[in-house]
Image (tube, chains in turn orange, green, brown):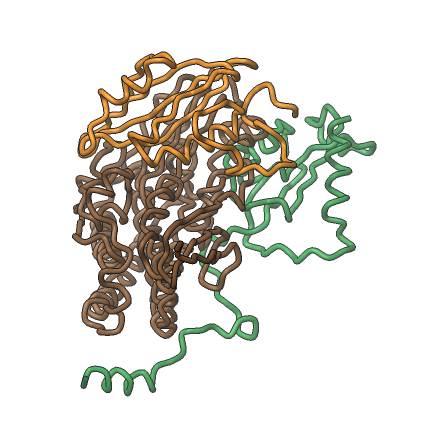
Length: 116
Length: 131
Length: 362
């Protein structure tokens, strides 16, 4: 697994240069809570027809920053982005909450600063 | 076309594929995963089975009339909930004396009734454990 | 003058659905123009439970209960992730037994999907016949592991039960009787005239669209993409067992059925090779230590690729368990396939995707 650090400003350009349609496969978006205010966001890619090659782009954000969306390049990322908004309470461009959680349920269950 | 008629004709004489359960018993396979059984005299009270159980179906709770076993230093008693158990056998694999103190039998668990107090009785045990 | 459109829902309770999912179709005269979906009906919070309530050695039993059909793939994928964090060396016999259970699981899951597709197009007799032929496979799984559906077979370091020569003889006999039945099914699906009217050309996903939507599993292989985690990952010994990657063209319901049928035949050959070439050795090795670090492990479930990300820092409670299930990544592709199809074909198209909503909304 190869990890590459990016910043919120250049993540879209880095992914646009890296991603080739018939060679790479977008797996998912992931969030890991580091402490109460910081969350590490990861974009995970793999290669078609190559053995054990996984590339991860990561950045550390706080809850207030806006994460850019990659849906215009990879249309299937919309559902991972909506799950991230629900589970961690972060803001992602063009992605609304409500995939898993209802209005009266506990908010941002996976972040360390959640109410429970 | 002819295969169709041939198949339909042979199907007239085949047995049905269904079991008439519960009128006809289903055979239990070998090594059926049944209830966990415990023998108090051989237990050494290491509490490894309690730590290994995934749903928490084995609890050692403090009691007022403990047994005579000299290893029971903290006056504990073994409690088992057959309706929370998933019959995975992790407790037997974790036990240092697997066939003497704790083993998995081939008996089926009984169906719970209201008198068994399945939920409230077990919540009382968990409260005793925490206190 | 604007055209009049009506909104028709498919669901969350519908006679053709196995699990709750709701689609809202905007239709004009039976042709579907737009799709909106809601998938979170059975959300149970498993990812949070794995980091707060259960310790790392109880989690194989917890994640197996996310889904009933792909239970063993969840617990095996998590176990492989923890074993690579602990630096373990699992014996070859345990790996062969694990692959045997995964392939038997694939056979029974594909047969369930095929029977469900037939039922949704009106062929209830075929549904009963395939379900009846699937029962001996469930009996085999009960003989090997003790349960029909939730196997509880994999634990960290190996497997829980072993097979003896009597069980091996039974496996070979059952699979030998199953193979001609699957070949009859292939003939039936290819030559039956009214099934071909309902399946050919319906619900097609072109190869270009499959690349754009990152389709996985039988959905992608039916569109012509050569992707399968069994050839992209080296953790399990698939290349010694005669694995073949099966692709078809067209991407419609007929192609997806054919991919599943030929995969069942390949799985039957692999299971027979496993039983013939089973190496000697122990079935479980004791492991010490607590997991620390981060790792990604992937496995081919019957519906596509399953990915687990596990992070720990040396304690009994883990930091993060991220589960990416195959149906979850295929939802955008599903929604795109519906556009332009007739509303009456929607249940058959949905059944041919083989969606597992318990996995999606974990």
